[in-house]
Length: 347
Image (tube, rainbow, N blue to C red; front, side, top):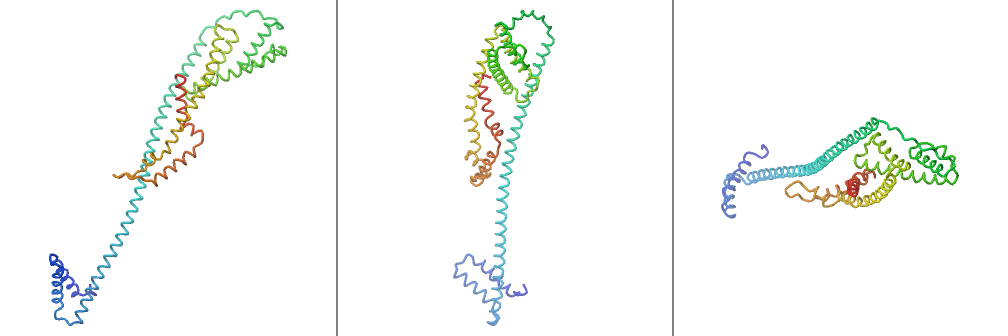
């Protein structure tokens, strides 16, 4: 203020007041009024002093305008910085919102898995209790006096060779070593026995595999040793009843083989039916419209964020590509396959 001078500040103040007072006048009248004020303020001064006073006033006005301009530039830069920070914060909020939504989804999936696990655990406990109950009943049942065995047929007779073949097949079904009678069979009967043993082994393994698969479909993979031994013993018993010529055993064996044959056909059909369903679910993860909808802004306009949608689509593709085959199968194909197989089996 000392460089400007009190007289220059007073001149500026008078001109500003005059400017305000003449806002309602036209431009010529306003200029005339300002000239009067200027002449009055400069009256009594020599031209050199008057020019110096005007120069100081002008310099002061220019300096104030420059300061205002610098402050405006600084404010503009600060506003730009705040807008950039706001945009970054919005991006962070969108990312946090996506993570929160994913967290809710994962929590829901975890709850569903826990409920399924509890249900399977209940079924497993019920089946385990039933198996133990049956075993206890079998152990508690009084032993019946076995019927006297028929007199053994002579080893070299047809009946003797047939009995030896039956006993060898029974031993194979029960996992016992070969019998002495089997070693004494003629070479032709031995080849016939080897053929029957292979057919029996295939039928046994097929039935055990089918039964294990069906039990796992109902109970889940958490079957204990008691359950596994139980159904293996049942499978072996059915074949041994056929070798013992039990009543109805041939029809039961024929029905068993037909059921397993039909199961293999239905198994293939279930796999074929699960492929398009699982593929549709897999492709839904990469649906552009779905990804774009999930990346829209949160404001009133909800503008499409194409850059964010492309990044999200690329991330989803990378995640799916990184999944191991077992997890890819479990996530997209196991459920439709099991549902289709249960439908075909009428379960």
